[in-house]
Length: 277
Figure 1 (cartoon, one colour):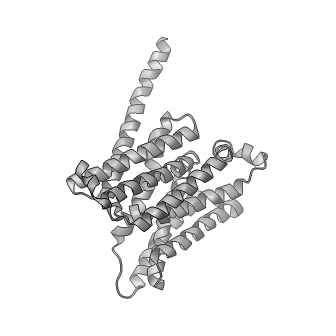
Figure 2 (cartoon, rainbow, N blue to C red; figure 1 turned 45 degrees about the vertical axis):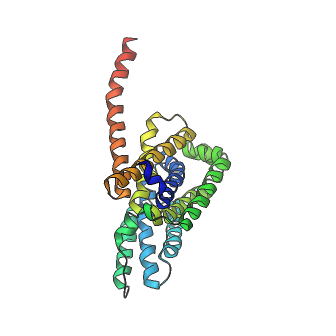
Figure 3 (cartoon, rainbow, N blue to C red; figure 1 turned 60 degrees about the vertical axis):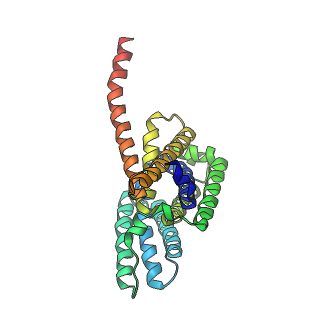
């Protein structure tokens, strides 16, 4: 496996995966604590509508996905904050509607239509220097934003009522988080694909949550787990000549199931020990 590091495309893929892990570890931890996982999934799938619209209009599909996804994020925010619509219903509508709209746009596009799997599952082994630069800039921005806003975001995550009483800009911060999810999804689609982005946003945070006492610790742990899954999946895909995205996802699912199973088995033993003491 070490000889794989001699190839530039492999090193680029590994670096992209590690940077993506930082982005998803930070945002994924926050949306897990805030019970916004369905929001991330809905926005991710809605981005497919923007990709299809881009092809239909003859523009860069990722540019179409960028503006379309930002619009969806703003629409979700407006409906939840102003109309007080139930967010689960909204996400279901945007999840299904975005995918259907994208497929419809692709069906109406004349000439070449892309392979849908390239956007759903991506190919991290085909990352370009331009992709690396974009992901790196996004990673730096997200790290700086969360470092600066961490106390406020922590209050909003664990005690939204206190945050509102304290006159914190809760509505603006909610919009900021939705925008960060949208931008991260679009940037990472070109490298990882929609399905892998959702997996990296949800699985690492879910794995470390039972063992994390603080949001900061959860972010660090989720980032580390995501890096482990990404690096392991890329190496396994190289060794066995299998799709990297699917390998990373299956590793994450396996580790999550082991964690859940281990936690369920450990809790009765822990209670018995406490009773005996």
